[in-house]
Amino acid sequence: MLDQVCTELAPNGVLRVGINLSNFLLVTGKSDNGQPQGVSPSMASEVARQLGVEVEYVTFKTPGELVDAASSDLWDIGLVGAEPARTQHIDFSAAYSEIEATYLVPANSPIQTIADVDQPGIRIAVPERAAFELWLTDNIQHAELHRAAGRQAYDEFVSKNMDALAGLRAGLINDVKKLPGSRLLDGKFTAVQQAIGTPKGRPAAADFLRTFVEEAKQTGLVARLIEQFGVTGRLTVAPPA
Image (cartoon, helix red, strand yellow):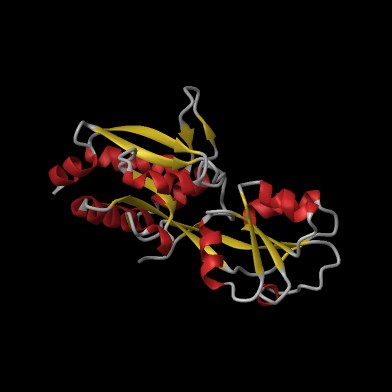
């Protein structure tokens, strides 16, 4: 079984791992030689260890860029949010971790709950092609989504006096500190499901990754990595598939 997985994932003895650098909960720093460190790189390193191959990190500035590269033979496994829109070219495991997404609203906003946001006339700033932006695109029915690249969404939220800023709760906590009177809404509109994917057409590899993720949750590997990299309370272990 592992021989076929290695043939599909690392025929030359090297596992190329797509890493999204924009998720600061999953990539928390760099090693002395410049390699990414965090929960995601460590999960990938364990995949390579179990296969008996070397690991090579292929980094991307945004999750959208990582997903776009799935059909370009640039990586063999990618660690990114498993949104339905991304399954056209990628086979995903179940999630190994979850990150809550919610809204930040400005001072004196009448918005009190998550449900209050999806109303006519409400303008939501959101980073384009983030996993939660894909969810909002599929689910927002009345409010207007204003997409911008990365941190530009925050800038537009402030400069254009928008009604809400969508984001990961852990990141929005920092934004609240910069905007006097602003606040985070309780609850979540979705939880980003962080998973491991491989380009379609690698069935043995896809099965291996699904099993690997379930074992990583069951044995406590994911929980230990969350603690090791100091993201306890902001990143949670996903439930069993």
